[in-house]
Image (tube, rainbow, N blue to C red; front, side, top):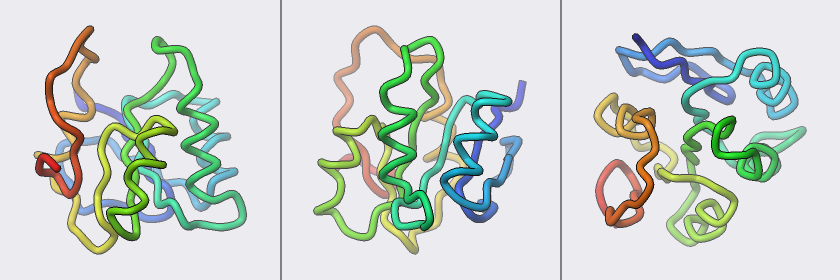
Length: 124
């Protein structure tokens, strides 16, 4: 089964996932409410409802409903805040998000994980 990924703003250049593209944060939350996805890729600086608000809204969902959250960050200084709001993968803006970086985010959650935080698809 191909994982469904909700992408905020523009389509990703990634094969092997079913992408649903949302125009803005409000649209992303509405689409997720209608059809939950395995992962959500969020550009943190999009108006009118920015990606920080989307992370905050989705990051508090119960584990059974919460998608894997991937944050597109402007610089590494934003990573702690994004991870605190529930992002499990942080990718620097302008860095291509490849399937190898996205697919691990779509795998079923493990009860425990010893993996370090991720940024740009490689361990931080």
